Each structure stands twice: as C-alpha cells, then as structure tokens.
Amino acid sequence: MLFQHLQQQTVELGFEFYGPVLFMVLLILLAVPVWAALGIGSVVMLVATGALPISLLGESLFDGIDHFALIAVPLFILTGDVLVRTGLSNKLLDVADATTGGFRAGLGTSTVLGCGFFACISGSDAAGAAAVGRMTIHKLVEKGYPRPYACALVASGACTGILIPPSIAYIIIGLILGISASTLFLAAAIPGVMIMLSIMITNIVMNRIHKFEGEKAGFSFARWRRTVWDGKYALLVPIIILGGIYSGIFTPTEAAAVAVTTTIVIGMLQGTLKLEDFPKMLVSSAKVNGVILPIIAMSLPLAQTLAALQVPQGVVFAVTSLTENPALIILLMIAILIAAGCVMETTPNIVILAPILLPLAQNIGMNEIQFCIMMVTSLGVGFITPPLGLNLFVISGITGESVLRIASRVGPYVIGMLVVVLIVAYIPVVSTIFLPS
Image: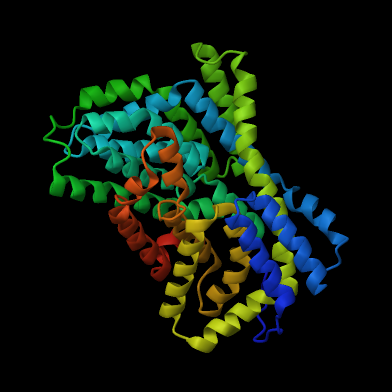
C-alpha cells in the first residue's frame, strides 16, 4: 500500500507549491486537456520544489502505466463498443424491459436496469449514457416523460457505469493504492446495486407525484422467458465477466479479454459484425482509451511529488486540527470528493486524491476497502452534479437538450445517491460483508 505509516507532522509549503497548483487549475479552466494540464503542472512543481529529480519524470510516466491490470481498461471499453455494434445491447434492454416494464413506472425502471446491465460489461459511465440514451430517451418521451426529465433519468442511471463491477474506476484506484481489483469488485457489488435501486426508487416516487406513466398490464412470465431466451447470448457476456471474476477463475484483465472474444465471436456468428466493422470499432475504442491512459500517466508523477512533499500527512494534520470527530471528517471527505467529481473526470481525481485522503480515512479507523468504495461512489454523484457533471454533457450532446434543463431535473437523483453514499461511509459492513475475514 502506498501510505502505511502516518506521521503527525508536515512541512511548510509556500508559493513554490501553491503556484503550480493554481497554474494547473487555471489550465483546466481554460479547457487545456486534463492530461496536458497535469503534466505541465507536475513539471513546474518538480522544478519549483525540488522534491524529486526531474530526471525521474520519464521513468515515472512509463512505469506508471506499465501494469498488467491496466490492460483491462481498453478491453472493457472495446467490449462495450462491440456490444453496441452487434446489437447485443438492444437485447439487454429488451430483457430489462421484460423484467420491470410491465409495472407502473416500468419503462423508467427498465431503463435504469438496462444501464446496470451495460455497466456490468463496459465499466464506463459515459459509454453507458451514450449507448442507453440513444435507445431509450425517445421511448421515455413517448410514454409521457418530459424530455429534460428523461435525459436526467438516463444520465443518473448511467452513473452505475463506474459503480457496478467491473468498473474502470476500481481498476485504477486498486492500482494506485496497491489493492486487488478483484477484491474491490467484490466489495462494490452491494453498494453498486444500492445506487441502481436508489435511482429506480427515485423514479418511482417521481412517477407517483407527476404521473409520467400510467397503469401497466403487469409482469408476463411468458414474455420474460421469450425475451431472456432471445437475449441469451447478450446475457452470457456479463455472466462470463462477473462469474469468472467472483469465482476466482479469471482476473479482471483475463475476464475482459474473454468478454471481448466472446462478443466478437457472437457478432461474427450472428452476422451482426463484419470484418469491415473492425477498423471503426478499434478506432472508436482507442479514442476513449487515449483519454484515460495519458491522464493516469501524467497524474502519477504529480501524486509522487505530493507524497514527497508530505502533503497527505499535512492534510491529516490540518483536518484533525479542526476536528477529531470521525463523523464530521467523513462528511468533509464526501464533500471534497463530490465537489471534485463535479469539475474533473474520475481518473485524475482518483490518482491525485486517493493517496491524499486515504491516510485521513485510516486515521479515523476506516478500512481501506471501505474508503475506496466510498470514494468511487462519491465521485459517481459528481457525474450528474452541475456545473460540469460529465453525464449531463454526454446526454446533452446526443439529444440536443440544454445542459441546464437536464441539470434542473437531476436534484432528486442526487439526493437518492447521496443517501447511499452516507450508508456506505458510515456502515462498513455494506462494503466488507463479502470480504474474507
């Protein structure tokens, strides 16, 4: 683990530290790519503070991403892309609709369940928002949902992309803190499902108040059985991924490789995937992966510099000087994480904040696994929290709906997700019940 011994001391940090930090923030506000802002800021901070030799920068960049676990990231992204191109994602949504669509508020509930199915495969919330949004928002509007509300519902449901295993976020935080991704997937199972249920329940309550959907015909077992049989190959993919990881047959990386192979074989055999589809599919996945990995690479030298300057110890010292109440410190960490999730992507938030906040969490007796689940869940709330909630912009981009109009409808979902965040933060057993003693 990155920080095992906490020293109750800190070093004096002057403008040579705060100057580069403000410079990085300014670059991000000026829409400079995050990886470039982090890289430039890291170099400036290294030169200004002399915390580490600048010659170590190149080695750190390459060593930081030279990990077997990170191979899972592009593979899960590619799996999600293949799923959409082969039409298997439609089958998953059909199964979700057959499962819950027959009840009141059923289409909204099945949309969220579809987001959960997609999360079990792609590990990415943005991919889930784009894929599910294109297929469901017009249907929700036809059923009586106001368009901004339908967009807010899909944006919220897509948050499960980083919260339900397998999740790219858990792979990254496991890499940064030296924790097995398989262990984090196991710990995240209940909290991830709880987030999905909170979004479903919120939609049901909103339906009761506003009557978006009328009465439904009820659940039909015959229809459900036919739909499940028709979508058996689509359901096979999440079963392989989760079953292989939780049973110990596969590592997350191996499970991702098997999932990619399985979806490609299914698509080829069914004739929904052709050889000419591969170049576009690979380029599309490479573009997404090309956003994530440079951020990881550039964030690691910054994290190492912060460690050398004893910033994590300084944060612990500063916070505990204000209050030693564990409940208040947990609330402070949650507020920091949600605020960070509003303005920056998950990957740099994890790489930068995880090593800083983990010692603070351990100082109040929080288990490192519980901390990881709390952190990722809190960051997930930021995806639908204005001003820069990523999912809001993704849904706005595919529908043309104003971000402000969508943001005006996400309030109930933010509250519902916050309830789950607090449960995870204050009740350790929720995230540790499946872990070996």
